[in-house]
Image 1 (cartoon, one colour):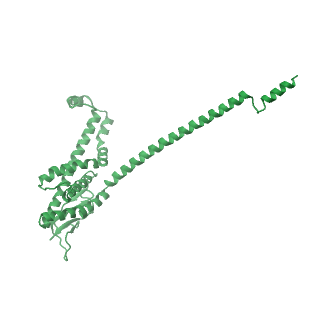
Image 2 (cartoon, helix red, strand yellow):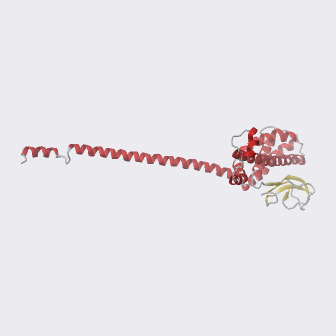
Image 3 (cartoon, one colour):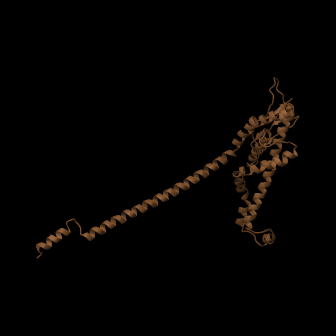
Length: 286
C-alpha cells in the first residue's frame, strides 16, 4: 500500500501538471522551435532581398537599354535632325553671317559643307569600324589569345568544324546589333577627330563651345547614329540645276513656285538609300 506521506509528495511533485524534468525539456523544445522558425524567416527575408536587388538591377539595365534604343531609333533621329536645323543651324547661321558681312549664301554653303563632310566621315568610319569589329571577333573566336607570328601556321593546321564555320559566317548581324547599342560611346572621339582634322582640312576655323562648333558636333553625332542603322539612313544633298523632285521645300517663300534648285540649304532625310523620305530638305530655288 502507498503511504499517505508518499501520496502527498507525489501530489506536490505533479502539482503543476508535469514532472519537473519533462517540463524543462518541453520549454527547451519550444525555444528551439522558435529559433528554427526565426532562422527560417531570416533566410526567407535574405532570399527576397537578393531577389529584389536582382530585379532592381535588371530594371535599371533595361531602362538604360530602352533609353539607348530610343535615342538611336530612326524616328527619334529624324526629330533630332529637324531640331538641329531649327535651332543649332539657325544660331550658327546668325553668327557666321556676321563674320561674312551678311553674305547669306556663303554662310549657307559653309553650314551645308560641314554637314556633308560629317555625313561622309561617319559613313566611311562606320564601314571601317564594322569590318574591324567583325574580323577581330572572328579572329579571336577562331584563334583565341594567339599572337600574329604562329597564326599563319594555325590557319592551315586548324580548321573549325562545319557548325563552327557556320556560326562564324553569321556573326555579322550580332556585331551590328552590339555596335548599334554601343554607338554613343564612339561619339566623343568622332567629334574630336572631325574638329581636329576634317574642319581643319576645310579651312573652317572655330573655337570650342561657339555656335559653329556646337553645330558641327551635333552634325557628327546625328550622322553617326544614322550610319550605324541597318540599313544606314540616307541624306540626299540636292545639286544646283536639278528640278525639284518634290522632297525639297523652298528656303524663301515666293508668290510663284520655283522648281529649279540653285543651292542646297538642308538635305532630305531618307529612311535608307532609295527608301521613303522621312523629312523634306530645304533649297534655294530659282
